[in-house]
Image (cartoon, one colour):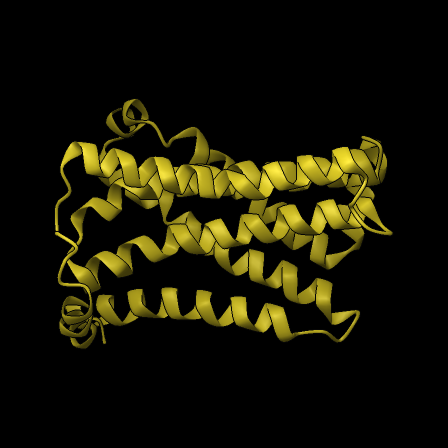
Length: 217
């Protein structure tokens, strides 16, 4: 699957080099950083102008959750894109995408805990235990914490490369839990159009890995 895609992508994008000069890479990374930050800045702007809609709390919580999922998909897409294109520099963007995913996931949880539950710990825990979609989302967030905490070069050296890689495979569980969180949330409204699209993307990104792993056995 990945082998077949590589010639096509190489033909479509022949001007993109496998390695970028430091200045070019820093420019690409800066542009992507700004793009990843724009959804947060948009929420700040809408909040300042009072344009968050009829239910501002729900709008903020859902927007932050959606962008956490988008950045999670971007993080998972880095390795398959590198396989398909040979662009080695993509790997150096994965940490940034992952940390932005954690940033939006943290704000998503804080918005739920603060704006919806007013930081009432008993009420928050009751919601986590009582509502399956919140259980799934909370589990995904908890698993993201050690991934974010060990994202530095110092932690990679401390854990060792193999142990670090084993730990960071938790991102696959995070992806499954995040989709389950979204599906369960939408099930109450019988609205699966958007979550189906995200589910298909995650299934593809994980499926490519499974196929490559099976071929390498």
